[in-house]
Length: 396
Ligand SMILES: *Cc1c(COP(=O)(O)O)cnc(C)c1O
Image (cartoon, rainbow, N blue to C red; front, side):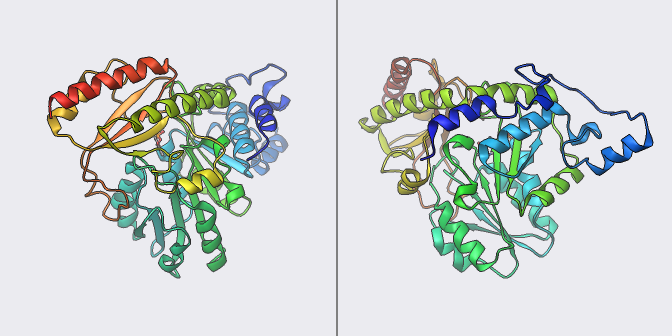
């Protein structure tokens, strides 16, 4: 557990260097393509310092970008942070920075679906070999590491099925075998304040800032933060891919950071209440919530995480497509949406995941429902779910 007082103070101050704010509480929105220089000497100096947050050209960022990058870097505990137009861009750029044709990538089987699609549709066509591994493999990853393995990609907890990974175990084994292996973690679920990636041995930590960092369902943004070893490569390869984000979007994410801790705590509390209620329901088979023993990898959650949030899943004992549709269609507060991390509650149902996850450790033959518990009153949310179960049962 890290010092909470220290973290809270960090959340208020992160990225607010006077160099970016000019003394205003929030850094202004600096929009820029061209930066103009009055002299050859000034221009040459900008060229020389362009990798160190000096104004050079819009694509390298403006003080708004630098303020957000520094804030995320402070919170994640890295050496440098690159900002992307969405989480998926951060993931693909981070992977592409460290693999080339002939290399091998180890990808967690419970990964976010677009990350998997990128492996299948892009990486493989580039001649990168991909092996999917069991999210609960832990130190057993040793047996899958080949001489050409360059990247091990983790996402913890896993998308939808929520398996919590032994992150330090995997990092230790990988780096002991080959210090050049880059371990990339999709740290979106925990956000930087509930899991410290670099303390656990990760080389690059990715955030879909679209989720809790933005926190209001009105911005797409991603970040990748790196340690000393990985930062120069990540920064330059991302720049060469043309990655840059809008200062208007960045400002929204920077605003989101200030209440991240408060919001996460409320999401977490609400979700624990809903999950506890679900545990007592006869319709529920297994609860996939990292704070509950029934969640695969629960022991790693207890050991490594500072806290949780509003996102978890559960499987149904019994259902059919019509009953599932009735459950979903009649919701008042839980709307269906392909994201989470905003202030509102969401629901998604996954009825067939078996094909996309051949190595799944979680039984996926029964439908899995994923909930994002928002900041509404919990009693209203439980009431909504209770009526949902009534509709489901009627249609069975
Ligand atoms: C949403 C999400 C992403 C992708 O973020 P976008 O900003 O939507 O591209 C990546 N990883 C995880 C775990 C996510 O939930």
